[in-house]
Amino acid sequence: METKIITAPVRKFLPQDIKIDSWKTIEKYFIDLKERSISSVADLHNWLLDKSELEAVLSEDMGWRYIKMTCDTTDQALTDSFNYFVSEIEPHIAPYSNDFNKILIASPFLAELDQDKYRIYIRGVKKALEIYREENIPLQTKLSTESQKYGAITGAMTIEWKGETITMQKAGSYLKDVDRTVREQVFNLVQSRREQDKDKLNELFSELVQLRHQVAVNAGFKNYRDYKFAELGRFDYSVNDCFLFHESIAKEILPLAEASSLERKKALKLETLKPWDTEVDVEGRSALHPFNTSEELINKSIECFNKIRPAYAEVLQIMKAMGHLDLDSRIGKAPGGYNYPLYEIGVPFIFMNSVGAHRDLVTMVHEGGHAIHSFVTKDLEITDFKSFPSEVAELASMSMELISMEHWDVFFTNPEELKRAKKEQLQDALKTLLWIAAVDKFQHWIYENPTHTVEERMKGWENVINQFNSKVVDWTGLENVKARSWQNQLHIFEVPFYYIEYGMAQLGAIAVWRNYKSNPQTALDNYEAALRLGYTKSIPEIYKTAGIQFNFSQDYVKELAQFVKAELDSI
Image 1 (tube, rainbow, N blue to C red):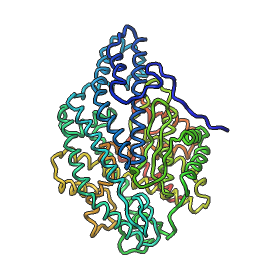
Image 2: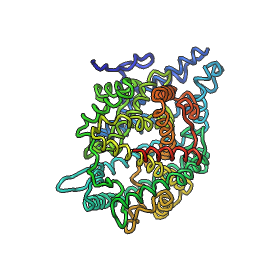
Image 3: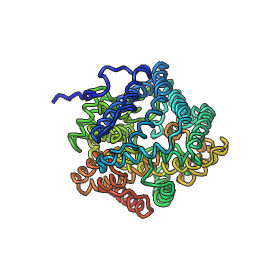
Image 4: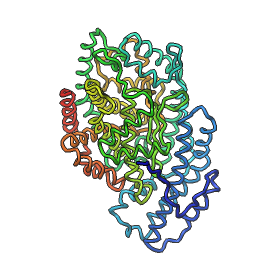
């Protein structure tokens, strides 16, 4: 069956062939929207549709610039293209966006819009109006360009191993080597390389913290944390809820992680369990290798998704046919992985750094979950309905990690390897919750104390990570490595405070998976119904539609943790 190629809908406001090469090219469309007469609710509705089309076109144009830049950080022309949009086009957009928000909220026809459909969008518009400050536009522009330096710095990191120059992602795969000497040597080489750029990253981050604090002060906030909560539209939970999350994770997840570390230490027959011993298979088996090439990864992912629901497989088939995948790790490519939504065409782009490891399989199905979310919401009425909060977006992706696990026999034909893969996935889910809690708590400290020194920052991180790290793992002699390990987390540099959402979504995903194991079709129907809402309902309402709770209490975390433990024990 031939895979269909999706094309963008015919534009009704902007020309089909418009090329966004300068502000002048698009300025008249902003002027049109600002000066247009709105005499009825129908006029207001059409105005919203035209504004949405303009936003989708611009978002997609910037998206492709970002995608191309991260695919090759060594090509200065690609970086310049992205930075041009950020510095020469985006600053002009911000004042108009604020004007549009004013027009919408002041419209006498606002109440005649479908409130069930638009209420979430309208509350976000009102909050954006509250925090907008014109003097923050140049600061936001500088933050956008400066934060991208993290990708360039870390993307250039490599080590020499056995006569070959390898990326940090590739080096990470050696931490699963059964030879402990190999693991230790590679770990030390990686840390030596990171040490070379420690000061550079600290300098960059110090600048980012000061810029962010100034943005917050300009907007009338005490600190950037409080500003960012408003900017992220965190209407459905508070700072104290985040603290509750940290506490619940430390109390209920850390004991499970420590028990696992003790078992690992005993199984490996080690006097001390070092950081390079935490990934290797305890029975001395080679690292899981679910695929050899990116072509095999995508084809097996399609087969896996087909077993869940054929429509999900079609999502990946379409992306493959359209060239919306860049999966291989290579020198000069930015680190990490993402699913970049492209709001006009509705077909996102998946970027990752695969090296044939089990973690790459997980990343693929994770980003595939995001892609499904993009596809099922691509026909929602306005762009903002498709711009979901991360607590919802990550529920889509992290649930797919666990749901797909039931069909990983596509990747692992050996039953014992399949068991290993599932066990690693569940153990990683628990470890991830601890790391997320640490990263989030650290960021609260950073922005509550914006004048901290580099030394205080390192000490602050060490204090935090010790609250979530297994005491069984011995960091003696590696204290400096531990103190700067926060620098490994891209989100702290590029998207501050966007990280706890992964933890909230991980809890939600465990609950979705629990439902799936009980009744697969009902659980999938609920999951998909939640995704199709986009951002037209509150986060608790979306989670409820998915058949789960939006809950960080210790009792609920304990309930989910015990379920995962029981599943681990049964493997």
